[in-house]
Length: 308
Image 1 (tube, rainbow, N blue to C red):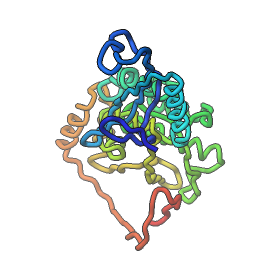
Image 2: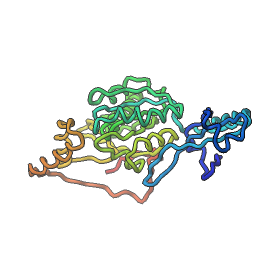
Image 3: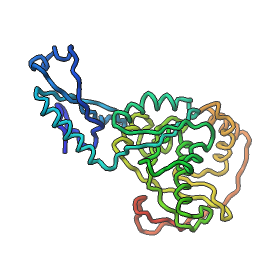
Image 4: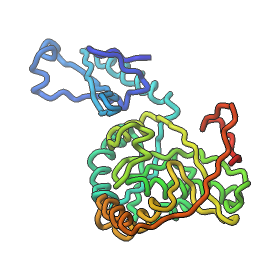
């Protein structure tokens, strides 16, 4: 099903919202509107795709003299949107006000919240106050009332939410995370990322660009990108989950030192990296791996990898 505009076809899967449009006096007195005694109109808001994976919200207005016909179009399009079952209706939003350049709250309020409101998405917003606030909160809230969790921040904020969601699922299912051979319960609640941190690696690798509006639109239309998650254990004790990388040695020392300098923002990584480089530490370790079998796998197949 498509809505035909003057220049392109817009798939219903990329329509954000449909609203009745009130024509002001100035609009009624120009061009095609002037020929109508009492014109009626509705506006379709949709995803406009640009280069480099960037999306933005565009709109096109349809008009007619028949009010009943106008209402029929609005109703028909809204029914088509209701059929998009992958779209979220209720979201839990965590905002890190200290991440990156401390712009998370402003980015959400000015760029993201208006789009969620336009798409009729209800939100509960939590401003985090300390490290692991989001993670701890996810163990307490009624998670079943939400279609997804959105984190406004960087990779650290995403990691918090991921650990909170996966940990909550295992706790509710009676699974011991410290057992590396335990079959983990898959998390069926999606995580949305609004980039606003010092590093936005996960967002960039899944969406293709670090742009709050683009990410918000992907969330609105219900896009889903599955990710493989690996767990790290030591002496039968759970340490961390990871979806991007695990650092040891030089990289680990940089992260450890930079944690004490969050007040510096993104510059802390350059400073800590230079400082660690000058220390001339060396790191011992042995890396072993097991070659993959000649089989194809996918994050969607729900099969756990226990080799290596």
